View 1 (tube, rainbow, N blue to C red):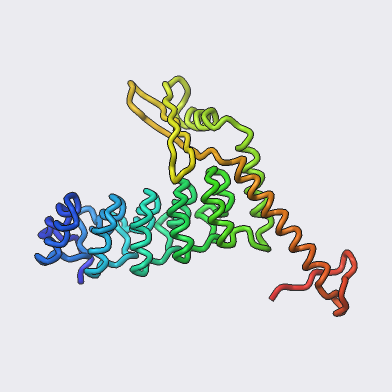
View 2: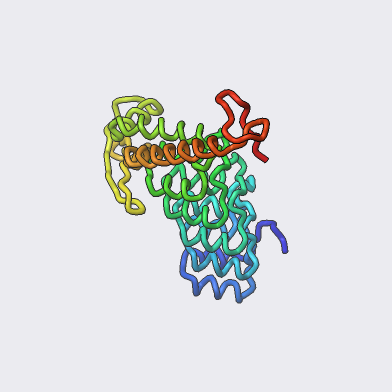
Length: 284
């Protein structure tokens, strides 16, 4: 099966802009599930980013590789594209077909990095349930828990904690995430977003503010307008105070567990109740 662009099979790409029955007809007429267009975009990637779970399943069943990269440079993964858009059903379909949840795109982003950074809470849950590693950092070394706290989605942070992002050994990360949640809980989100946009694009443009529910959580979006048309935008969730409470509880639980472990741990000589200053017992 070739990975070269297929120029004599336009019907499959046309079908992706129609419905699932059209995709079935194209595949039965001989279109290859691994087809790519002249720009290197694969049919599976196109279906994934356009939130076409039915078409995604048809292509996967017909042999499309869930991990095959798309685009002129081969840098875009179907799972990352779906995660970026919050297309949770597509994410589940790709994972069910064997997509590797921690596979990185060209610039080091994983599907979980996209989903956490954009506050796609339902998608985060699906990725974690499908085996994504909550301790795997982003391309700049950023921990997912800190990123989730900055984003302000409590549901995202709960999911990360449930899958071990705040486990013993992660105290420094929990502390950093808590500091970010507290910092952002004390700022006006609209003003913070406007400040970021003006730093990047300059002051003086009109701004439009929206508040929308996303996965049951409020998101604030600020858009800069040029001649009445949106020219740039940024958004954040507003659950930073709730996240701070979650992380404080996690921090307290971890501290209690550490204290209990310390009281039960043997000393360097093997006797219980090591004195303060004794070296900790190495972990396996």
